[in-house]
Length: 292
Image (tube, rainbow, N blue to C red; front, top):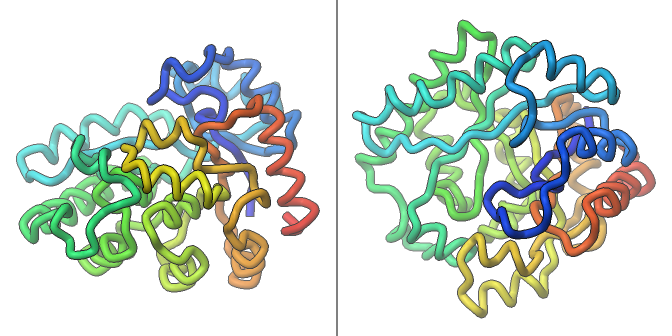
């Protein structure tokens, strides 16, 4: 497997007032200094593939993928949503990247109840919307095929695939040859799922992974105070790898035993520490404890 990180750890585009913007080239330099071999595409990165390729090479980094929100609940939106991701897809294709990450955009109401989604499905998609989502993802996957890109769906707090039940429904309704998964360990825990068991159950769909650790006390406060997703991030529910409650040693042992060979991207989203310090702590844990 390949170990990378993400620009969101330095600059969270959803929280523009969180801290001063870190310049793009400093982000790349610190990623490499912390010991990562790749990065996802982020805000402020060059749109020209030649420029991006040169800048990444100068820092000894590879491009892993990028993340896009999509709304496929209504069939009439499918064409526009597919068109929306194509510029990012074209850039990834030009860079020789093989995977595009998408997540199902949540409404403000879903964002507000992240981490507290009712188990009865009352806040989720209707049968008609699920059918539209499945069809839209299949259509998007077909549109990506000429670019040699595979589509992966990211489980995400505040989205319409947050809970384990929603993830299972998505997998039941979609073709595994067309729709893979980017499983995010931190978001699985945030949504109430058991992390290792979910990775094991959906291993055949796993084509990409995000890893975070979870501060149990911070997450409990977020739920107690009924905070929405963006307000919750200011409470730092995710922490450096090895400093939270997740069994990441067990997860990586499983990934190695199952011969997972894709990217693993270390994300934290927000941190009270400088991004470089957090990046170093997580990378050291992966080397010294997980052996990757």
